[in-house]
Image 1 (cartoon, rainbow, N blue to C red):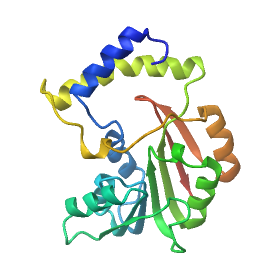
Image 2: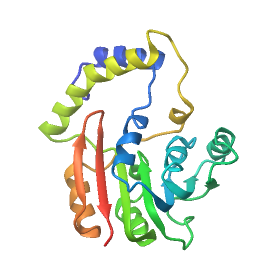
Image 3: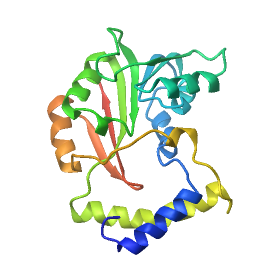
Image 4: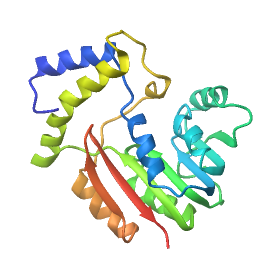
Length: 218
């Protein structure tokens, strides 16, 4: 989006402020398709209001969501049925995971807030043998491919906003209220560091200013 004139960017910002939709939630079903039908335990790092954690409860016997914001984890508890096998904790994503291992670890639009290599090492060490790590991340645009995908995402983003809101002006979803910051690493840098920590990892650029990372521990 950085190649667009400032006037166009401001117009898009106004449009999406009035018709917000959660880009990250679009990947939730995609994440589920990367996972086994049934697993013992799952960890969602940066769980926010718990949307993905509640979906993971359909696959896992136990789900634990971690987020650094106590207010958003309280909101996640309120939104989660009491019978669901989901717990939440307000904790640091790197130092607050404890010693337990998990069959599935997910992390959506959070890892760019963390020291990238250290985060991957932490997730790797908490993943049980045979487990699956799935990350949906944000990279800094730099290459022509990055910019082309960003430009291609703009009309699709508008269409999705119209479909999600049906022409109405709606408040921002709870999952979109957390503070965010721009990514520091480019996709090329992310690939290089990820391959050094997670042998056999698969990464791919995606539309809507995201990339995906999938790794299975042997």
